Structures are given as C-alpha cells and as structure tokens.
Length: 444
Image (cartoon, rainbow, N blue to C red; front, side):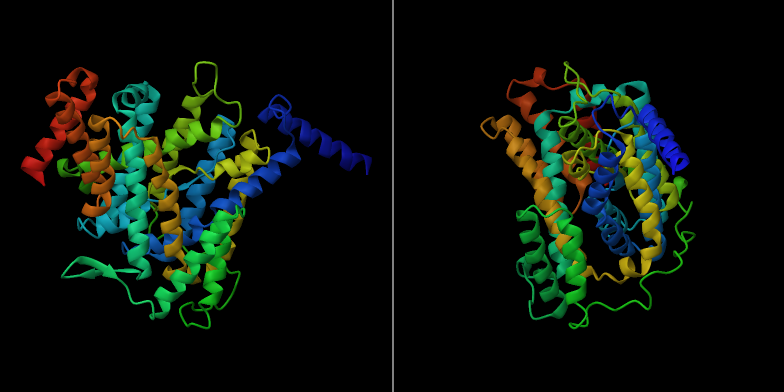
C-alpha cells in the first residue's frame, strides 16, 4: 500500500511540475473533472461531423475516425505544448461550408476541398509564426469580425432547417415551410424542442444528450436504424486518410475559398480564446494572451492534422469554457479530453446510427449561439452597420461564407472611402477589397 501511495504521489508531483498545477491553483482531480466536463459538452461533434461530411460524398465511418483522431491529436498538442485547458475539434460552420458549398454548390471534389483546408491551415501556421496575425487582427474592423461569426451562425442554422425538412425549396417564394407530418421532419422538431429546453436550463452536455434522446425516439418512428452492436472494432480511416488534392486546391480561383476558411477559422479562434481565457487569468495586464502564440500555433496545426486525416478545419471549441467553469486551468484538462476522444472510437456504431434528423437541431442551436455576435455590432454607426449587415445576411442568402466575406469587405472599404472616412480603413483592407473585386469581375 505504501509503495502504491508513493507511486501515486510521484505521478501527481510529476504532473504538477509539468503542467504547473499548484501555480495555477488547481490539482489533478479538478483537471480530470474539467476534462470530462468539456468532453461531454462537445462530444456531439462525433455525431454531427460524419453526417455533414457524408453529404460531400465522404465515407461516414472514415470521417468519424478522422473527427475523433484529429480532435484527440490537436487537443493533446494544445495541452502539452501550450498548457491551455482548451479542446479542439472540426469546427461547426466550416464543416457545413465544406460539404454544402465547396463540394455541393461549387462542384469541387471532396479531395480538392481537403486540399483547400490543408492550405488554409498552412497559412494560419505561417501567419502565427511570422507575427502577421497581429497585423490582420488590427486590419479587419471589429464590426466585420463579429459579422463573420454571426453570418456563419445564420448560415449553419439555415442548413439545419433545410436538412431537418422544416424549410423546403419553393419555385414561387424560393423557400417555404416544410411538411411536419413527415417522420424525419417531426423527429427533428421534437429534437429541437428537447435541445432548446436543455440549453435554456443550462444542462451540461445538453446538445449531446438531446441528440441521443432524439435518436432513441426515432427508433419506433423508423427514422433511426439500430446498429448490430453498441461497441465494435473502429471503422477504417483509409477512405479519407491522406486523400487531399493539393494541385486542385492551388488554382487561383480557389483563393477566395482558402481565404474564407482561414479568416473564418481565425476570427472564431480569437473570439474563443479571449472569451475562455478571460475566465482563467490567462490574459495579462495589456490584454494579451499569455503563451498566446503557442496556443494559436496549436490551433493552426490542428487544421493541418485534420485535413491529412480526412476532415474539415479543426478549431478551438468555445465549449472549453465548460471545463474552465469547474476549475480547469492547465493543459492537463486538454489531455483528459484527448484521451476521451481516443476512447470514443469503439463507440462508432452508435455515432454512425444517429440519423440526420437528430443532428439538424444541433446545427440550428449552434447557429443561435454564433448569431449572438450581432449584439456586439454598433448599429448606430451606419458606416459600420451596413457592411456588417451585408456580411451576415449574404452568407445564408448566397449559401457561401466566401461571398459574405467578400461583399462585406468591399462594402466596408467603398462606403468608408465615399463618405470621407477612408483614413479609418487599414491599407490591408484596401488590398483585400481590390482582390475581391477582381475575383467577381474576372473569375467568378
């Protein structure tokens, strides 16, 4: 017993030294609990991502494996390298952009789309290592940063409504209300109600729990097909592993797409970092993130890793705040999350049995969360409000994050210039505006 105690203490002391637990006012037990809490709140991505990328023609089992392993690898690197209690996984919004716009609307192969994701990750790594990140953050006006987040939220909420059958196409009015007597639409509606109640009541892991409950309700409705086993050998990752097409992604016409992937990921990451880190004492007196470059590098590398494994952009999850709220302060929290993602691969039959009707409400709910960024826009200044509005609204209406970004950037620069406020616009914004105008004039 004494030997076991000695080994346990030695192990605890080792973790304390490596992650600076005492220095950060935490301990192993607290960090483990925080890691489990974070995992439960974000594990829904294991069900959602395969459903979304399957629409791009990708193998659902391979995407499940890529999602779990990319999340595990990126989160582990974040914990060990940056010592941050942040967890990463394929980002909501960008996965929808990948499947429904890049592949579905633009007609790209999913291999080329993965190549674009890889390049956006490489750009993010370079920008972080060279310090260009600070320049870009300063160049893009705050109103447009918030508008991008809100626009992506509206975009994925719209996709969720369409996928659920609640909104359908109409020749007369473009869109119309769906048929709620259809089993899948009815199930999605029930799932949305359950999810909304759980989220409103602040239930930890409410999205994940509601997806599982909705899937169970779908069994007697014959929407959910029961798997033969609950636990099985993990599916093969081979169908998507290292299948990216870089040559196809390096065409000049892909510039707006890669740019959009990079910037949407960047804005989302910065917002998450600041929001979560502000609760942990990781922001210094100047308002900068302590070890911020390490954390941003880990986030950027996550996208590169994910694209190689076969999934869309991997990014830091705001659900990390759940673990922080119960005391997570160091990278040990992230290590626990990473281990849980690895362990989850044996549950693939459950994840692959979840129907799209149970997943659609999650898209709508995450869209609501992201659309809240509209509260941060100063609508009393029309020169700020108009471009922000164009950015946010254009994304769902054109079914493209790229077009929303481009139109918003153009509107901002042109409106400021023509109203005598041209000096308020950073020179980088003018360059980006010119490139977007050239794209619309000669390439699109």
